[in-house]
Image 1 (cartoon, one colour):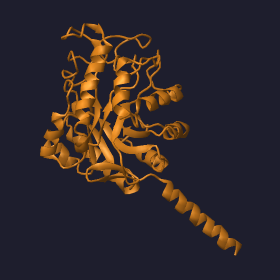
Image 2 (spheres, helix red, strand yellow):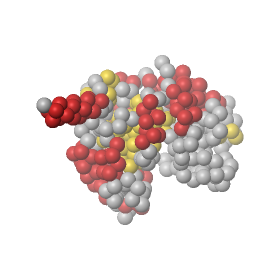
Image 3 (cartoon, helix red, strand yellow):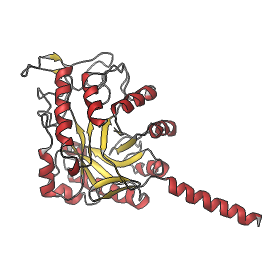
Length: 330
């Protein structure tokens, strides 16, 4: 009898654990978490401190409080968070994670070395996870794939297939620079939902109709937004640091996207905190930097890579923070 009780207790524990695991599905071209529709109100999150070139999460508690205030429900990270305590904090804050796997990250949970599978096996039952995302606008970098981008699409699709064999509870996506062509979509047949990085001035929504003409798969904007530095005057926005320009652009972007919420699964603003490591001396904020396909960045057609945060490096709120807070909390 004692053995039977122990056995039944183990079965009950396993069933309870299974029930506790979030199930993220795609139904009617919408994301659903445990049967409830989920619209991504996201932020790209790569917290690199002053003077450093690698991220750390020393300020995660403050960051999560700010994200909660802004109504952010999803963060998108460019490499996996291999820290259960950090993931627990994110989950406890009511925020989910889109986890991106790079192709060649010197073996750190990457696709080339197959170690991404180790991460998925380790964290696939963690409730912070929303999606698995493969690559970030790699279509702009054929030089990483022997000048043949098909090599990437093949690796991406094979990785997606393997993920879906071991994790039935989370869709697989990729973040593509602009709309993938017919061949890319065909080669990516195992992708469940496409993320599109889009910088088309202050209205990315024409892309939605373009997408619907070529695909019936769900879509989210994996990157969109504006920076807070103007390299030249434009209308009322003057050259130099200009939080008004960033706030106006993000206001228009989010307003236009929210008008079409029924036709996509969400958007992710780039990014949470300024990145001082991108364009020069990481000890200070430099203008400049380079990003592919950036002529559509509002309102000067220049990315100014170190000025994209909705908060500055010291976590002071920029004007765009209040814009995002207004939309994301409604």
